[in-house]
Length: 282
Image 1: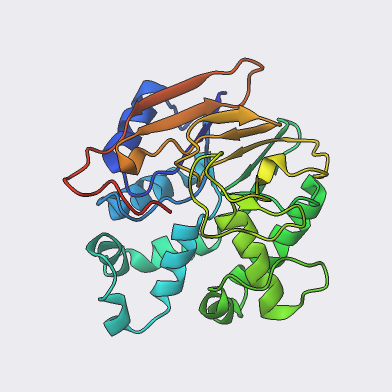
Image 2: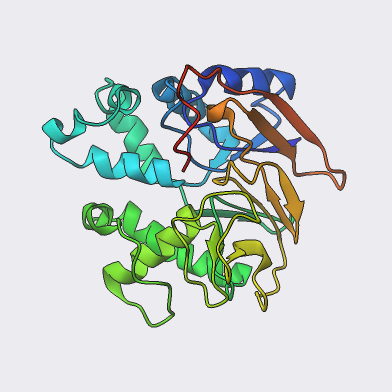
């Protein structure tokens, strides 16, 4: 059995197929870990979501910010759903939409395999979070998403405040946890996220650090694979393997083999950009 982690798909169906062919993925024997953001912007979100859903017995998926946004939009009135971009509308009005959305809502914020020695998240971890704390906080939100209160959570999850604090409760606590797992790139040493900072390291304001380089951060007993940060590109360091290499922006789609001590990376070209598509990454 081979285990592969794959970076942000963002509706790039054709590159996803090419990558699965290149790694010779066998669903009967191999396993896939998808780092979140399955949908949005690539133009083939419905096909991509259907593909990953069809592989669900052989795959683990964590929720990214675009996946969570799709879940929230799916709970709105039809008139509001028709205002989103055509790529997401094709998901929202597909005949199998309910099956896809219900499955996606059941996906976690974090996946860990201690026997393998790896943890997968979409974006980042708070500086003081050990892997055990991260698992606990992820489960808080996952229980809500899978329970009867998921509509309230999705309706109230948007917003940049409050910053994470262990004493937070209710919706504020859930929002802060979601922001860390799905939106974090840079933060202060106390863990306040700089949401507006999206560039490569070295472009951030003074006093901000990539989440994996914060001074005094917790020791972590698992290697971490993540996505979300396309301007960072392929990064390996501090026990972190960041593999969002901007497939939706004309970059590459990346797979990282997890069940080996070697650094084995496989890539394929991402989506071809139309004129004027190179701005606005998040």
